[in-house]
Image (tube, rainbow, N blue to C red):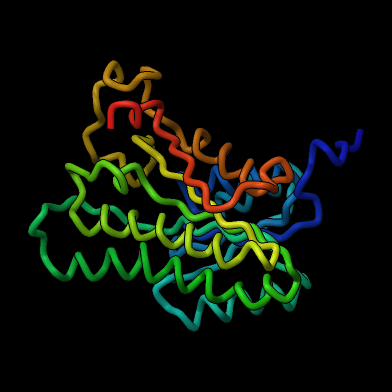
Length: 249
């Protein structure tokens, strides 16, 4: 039996997801594919596992090697997708790094985190912007962190700074994109169990109102919503996906 259009609201749309090889990015890829989108999984890591899982479930996905700090590579990939698919409807800027750090961390790490988390996000947005303006349609979701409003303890200052900047970017893009049919929102995950955070100590779940650490799928659901028709009157919104930790902030 064919799924109804309502069950696959992104059918025919094309999505580019950065940092899609694992963790939150991979979960987002699976969620959008389940809604019918054709997924381009981009990462500096191998994307085979994510792509193979989507294809095995009946979806369409392609793996793309991408270093988001390479501005020309981001533009080349966007242009290639548009040329081959005729469209690029959805951009999820999820690629990021969060190495342990301190307030007075080393400058090489500061530069690297800003290059990936902030410059990488802008490189990807700039790469798709002209196409989305021309088509008068686009859905952009940026992945921030609860560190944007309450800071971090394990990570360095540079991580919190970039995630605050990503929120400001989302609001700026939303204000300028609305007249072109482009919606831009952000999600700010809390404590999420992923490969990237595996080495970090986790809080006592009893200190989280929902009494558990989050999963990648907990973040993918809100992103899925922000890409679909039910959020068509939302832009510049920041969804805190924290299990309620925000209540104590």
